[in-house]
Amino acid sequence: MEHRKGDWQETYMGKFYAIDPRSDEVNLVDIAHGLSQICRFTGQCKHFYSVAQHCLNVYRDLEQLGYDYTIQLIGLLHDASECYISDLPKPFKVEIPQYKVFEEKIEKAIYDRFHLPFPTDEIHKIIKFSDNEVLYNEVEQLMNNVENWTLKYPHRKLDIDTKFRNMEEVEQEYLEIAYKLINNLQKM
Image 1 (cartoon, rainbow, N blue to C red):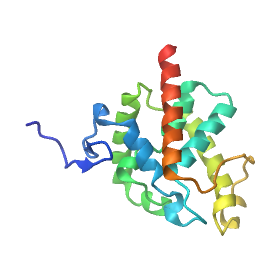
Image 2 (image 1 turned 180 degrees about the vertical axis):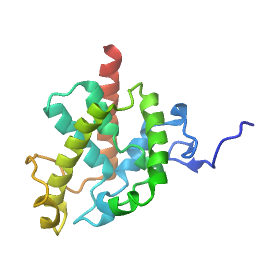
Image 3 (image 1 turned 60 degrees about the vertical axis):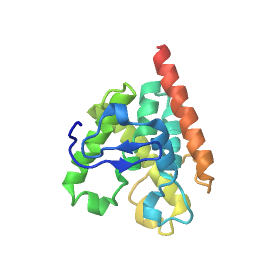
């Protein structure tokens, strides 16, 4: 039996070693399923709004901005590690630097699984810009203390989907778009 660092965790489709991630153990169904059931803003928003919905909105923004399939897929997957290790609110994340180390290892396994380059600084800036633009639009629609956010961060007004949606529906949409992008990249 092969020795792995850390213990495995159960996933929807099997198991995953978050401490010792491998690309062949990354499963798109696990990603879509997990993200569709994790609420953004640590659940402190007006209604349930999943990380998968957020990622779909980032993907759509990148598509509308004219970025290629690679950037669009990276945008769709930019929070995929959260299906394995959840997320921490920003105040805690900056205080726990080891979290970023584990998150990056998982991200590398995810990008390798889908034959994507690990985002360069330039690609990271593109994804982060869209991520933040979507975030500030989400805040306006989902949070009560909007002025805490939007006065500090000017942003474009986006037509994003923040309505309460069935988790299975979001999971299915996430999978359909991911498979479409993966197929488009394979044809190139």
